[in-house]
Length: 547
Image (cartoon, rainbow, N blue to C red; front, side, top):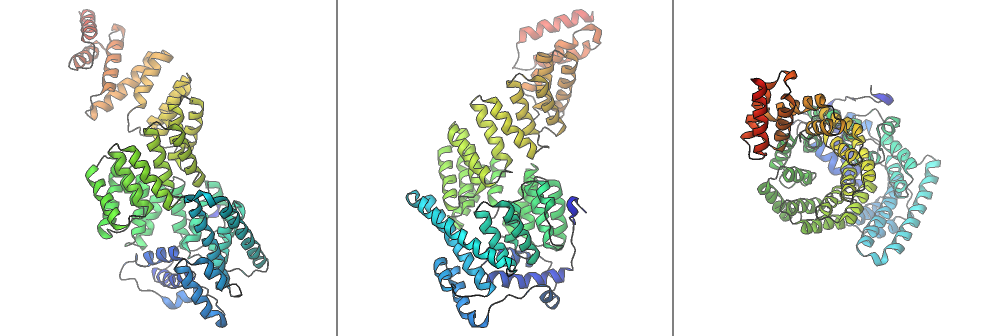
């Protein structure tokens, strides 16, 4: 068991799971929950081909959906209105209906209508305040109606899901979490409800307080939460377990790729995304993360190819706009990149990575006010986005406001305590504030966490040599760094720093390292990056001592 009494795994026969998903797809489609139906259908097709569904046993596990016979035709018509996005029309048609499915569809249509108007008002700001007031009034009325039904215990899993979404839209997080918890207990096959619940769990402690059903869908939720809370190794282990049951699920492959990306294992993540695209070249879910990898690795040709394919495939998807934004950013066309990230946000104002990436672009063009605004908007959507906290830290560093920077870097480090970059950023902040012992602690943490950029040891050498004046410690760190640089055959300014310090330090005869000091001097003389006169003088001095 995990803390909070959570079972790590809930096992069921795959035949039963397959049967349950098959029925759930029909239920979700009947309720207009197309995203949930699509997700369930993808997992249904993710089983090994030889697994046959046990429809009989599954039918006994799922509740039957209730529509009063007299209302059936009207509800079917209203459902088609929802499908073609005529939400007001659907809600109006169902105003007299009393079955739970009709109540859900009417409420869901009202909710979607408000969401649609809200998004339109963000594009056309002239009507925004009136639209928002109307939307809030509709939500409050819907909340009152659902509360009355709840007090009489008349809400099924779908209506509880709707209640959770309405409460979330009214910023009543605690109540929304409770309603969504009840929704997944009553009907665990609705992936949309699990995702809404995940968006309201901001910490490990909140997750452990949840009372979740002992159902195999919980395994998907816990793996998703591990990813969200940056427990990437645990997420990877869970998804590999799930992959044994769903070997053909591209969703699971893409979640594995996300975990690898979060762990900065870019090559393995890239291979996973390429496997997905070879199987399903028109899939766009998470492909913007693939474009981030190509951006970091500076693979211009591949990034150009997926940007062109995405534009040809789905021009008006936020993922496409982010991919194209990354492409222009890599080409150094930052204003054009901002334009595409803005377009992504017009299509979906809650598209998290577009806000963060836009913040990065504004940092590049030194528009600090716009960068801060973009990062703050990202954090409004998801306060666990360490990239936005890190971005705010960097932006305030540009503004030389180091106390602010430190605050934001601390937030990023709390979310990613094993990420050496976060510790290095904090260390630099402490250096700027002349807090050298604290800076040293940060650089040590960075080194312990596999500092790939190789910055920490060099910084430790410099701080011990120039600020703490502990030359022995400085020599230890410079030697460690030199060993790593030599093993990687890197010849950089850091190599020169280490060689120069060590040559000067070991010229002291009492340390009995004059031979090493001479070798370091010889290596320095082979470099173009040093003051040759100083090194020659140092060499002469060492040779005199040796005589």
